[in-house]
Length: 146
Length: 146
DNA sequence: TGAGAGAGTTGGGTAATCCAACCGAGGAGG
DNA sequence: CCTCCTCGGTTGGATTACCCAACTCTCTCA
Image (tube, rainbow over all chains, first blue to last red; front, side):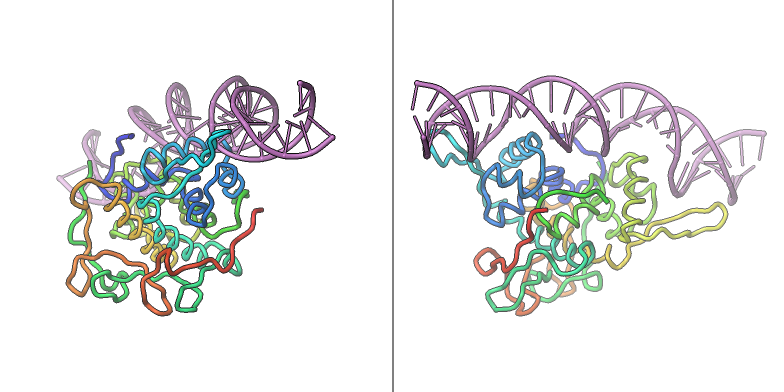
């Protein structure tokens, strides 16, 4: 793991695992239910060598698990671990931002919540359940510079 | 803007703007209140040439605005636009994931919500306000492959 | 006159990425 | 049993991105 200078910060630590090119697109496909190398290659557009490297780092980081699904010939697929499934809010937040600020026209992908509405994520305080934004948040501790 | 193969998707569109190395760390600093080139360089650890390139990209994409704050000598700082401020849920979700899965020990940075609790983000349905996860979401539309 | 501060550029080397082609184990069809 | 196909990757070579230190330019302050 490369030592990174700059602020001590969980965002930087997270990006060291999932911030390389194509990683989040692979995880998007995994959250959509895909598991196979060729599906990842086709659906993300990543070249096969880079995809192989990314899958190795994501498996090493515990975000994906490599599972054999046939014996002969030996074939493997990639399934999300708990920490991988925990990335859903990150990808949903990114998708919502992209829908609003990076995509023209209708969102290419849409989700339904069990309440029946088309799903849009909102960030709330886990403790009190009300919305969180710059008007009601303040930093109480900030990581130093290494 | 480079044409990217793979699925038509707002996550990919978002990453085309903010997914390059250092971009999200610059935006983290901006959301922490920093505005100056040298602060970004020091607090992120990015080299100055790459930082200059990233700031140009982010300004061109409308995420940051370059503002002159003195006349002689002419000096500029970078302030978040509305679309930049809208990235807070993305960075908070990333920080929460990093705290839980990529950082050992105490989170380096912490926030307080106005309710008095230490802030942790939760993703809820904007329509009904209840939590959203893999048990109560389903895709109703999925972008095709270009 | 000389030392900084602030916001960048420049040059040169290293590392990451892209692309097309290839490989090896087995399966399916003839 | 010969050939072609699928899946999950590797390999080689060219291109692009990134890193680092040093430098520039303008203006201020002592």
